[in-house]
Length: 126
Image 1 (cartoon, rainbow, N blue to C red):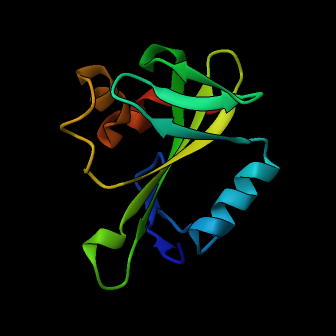
Image 2 (cartoon, rainbow, N blue to C red):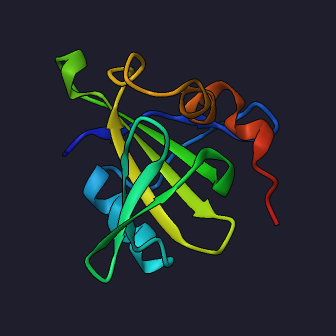
C-alpha cells in the first residue's frame, strides 16, 4: 500500500508528523525494531503462526502500543489502520486492517480492544 499515514497527536495534543510515508516503509522499520509477527483478526482474538502452527492471543493477552492510519488519495476503500502490538509474554508484531469493516464480526472484547479512542490512554511509554 503506497498511502501516506495520517498525522497523529502526541501526549501534549500537538500534531506529530510520521517520518515514513508508506505502509511498506513503516512495516519495514517496525520489523527492524523487532515487530516480526504478522497478526490476523479472528472474532475473539488475534492469530499468528509459530513454527507453522496457528496460535492466538486473547484481548487480555496483548496491548496496542501504537496506531498508524493510512488514507488513500481518492477512495475510502483504500483506508487502512496499522496496529503495533506487544503481547504480555513479549511477542511483538503488527496487525493491518481496513477501517471499520470488522465491527459486526468481532466480539465485544475485541471491538473494545481495537477502539482507537482509548489506545493512547492504555499506552504508557518507558
